[in-house]
Length: 222
Ligand code: SAH
Image (cartoon, rainbow, N blue to C red; front, side, top):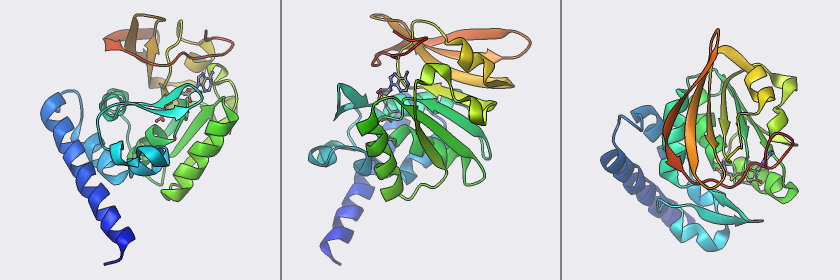
């Protein structure tokens, strides 16, 4: 076995331990088995800075530079479970960051679905694109722009996930969500709460617990 293969095996067993600990600590009422299986497929060590690779399978956020972080694995898992993603869906993410959350979504939508992710920091767009390509994902499109305006070109979306905290739900995101669609979004400045938004005849939202995210910056952001 060459050294690279041994390192990969090592990461795989660290990943299995992380997934197992999420299953035991947080439970299947908050993290679905389908999401845990998707996380088992994504090499998170390819989405962190090289100096942080040894910590890639610990359950906390890590800096990715530019004042931004890759979210903790449990947070990605909880958000993906709330979002209730299935194969073939068209999903929009605001805040690509490292590209890790997009990769988990890409596993959930499968090759018959697409994940669109918007990022405002040029260096992170490059970081996310490289990480996703190194990990072999072809069904994720990372674009530049102000995510508070959504991405009208590919709308409507079955699901929208926002990876930064907003002052309120940006109206363009509600417009670009399909009828029957769902969105998860953290709202608040100092005290933030995660919301699950449903769009039917009316738009309703339910609280899903306190969270800590970097701010959403933009026209409908801070
Ligand atoms: N999902 C990411 C975590 C990203 S942190 C991951 O898995 O790594 C939130 C990201 O949102 C940051 O990269 C930040 O630059 C970005 N962001 C903040 N406001 C934004 C906006 N209006 N449009 C697009 N990206 C935004």
